[in-house]
Length: 316
Figure 1 (cartoon, helix red, strand yellow):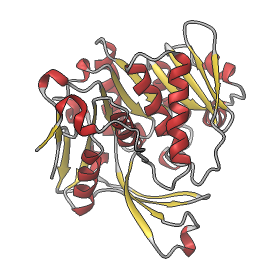
Figure 2 (figure 1 turned 90 degrees about the horizontal axis):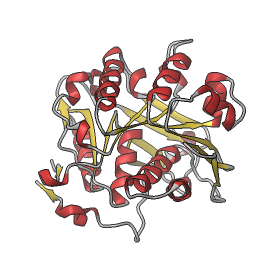
Figure 3 (figure 1 turned 120 degrees about the vertical axis):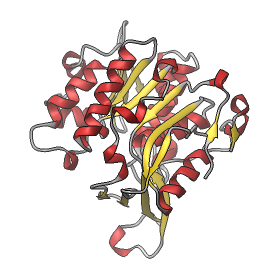
Figure 4 (figure 1 turned 60 degrees about the vertical axis):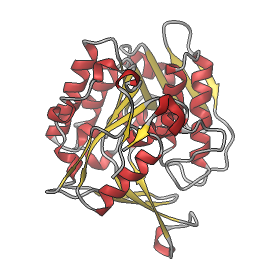
């Protein structure tokens, strides 16, 4: 199976860590109950971010564990094909790759319990050079998967805090994954610990009762950059200076799942490439817009850089 490998001199600028499952989605964007044809694509917040960032010219790596099965092998092949460095992805013969179905307009159905990725822990990243990246990205999905995964997130946060790298965290609240009463304090602690935090205003409302971006900032004073997304309204970045709001791109939405990952990728790619606040927010909206027009979590465009040309990456 292919792994995209970069020369040592071209270490990843962005490292993402988390589970990816095989996603099945109706080809016609209609309801799952009447669908006759389904498409298969990799689906995972962190690999989505890495895939979009790679197509925007960033050296991006994704770290995870997959099942040593046909679905895991296909996911690994497809993610590497997006230009993502997959050298730290392993396949576990003792556990399966997770699966989920998109039901457009109704959400998703997960079949991930006992998946290979649930066994991830601090040892998963022991050999990964987190400290050498510009940004390490996590989401709030990972700590909900298992106690081992929660320990992984804590270990990554501690290592990154002691380095020159920045920790990026997308709250990505998935209520079915959390026991009652656990998500709000756990996600608050992680979001407030990061250097860059992404959260939807709807998530902040459900978790912490916030009704405005300003209330979210008051609750989360820790991040150097806090990005509060408000659906089709726009996004606000809070940083060292005045808050900056950038309106969303008007879109006839086909399916919303995955758009938050695309936004984070666009934003982080622009940040790594030296973009200012408005440029970062606009890059996030532009990438989210592509995904909102599709049933897929990942959409490339003809104007995206060819990932095979980024720092002479080779596939072995």
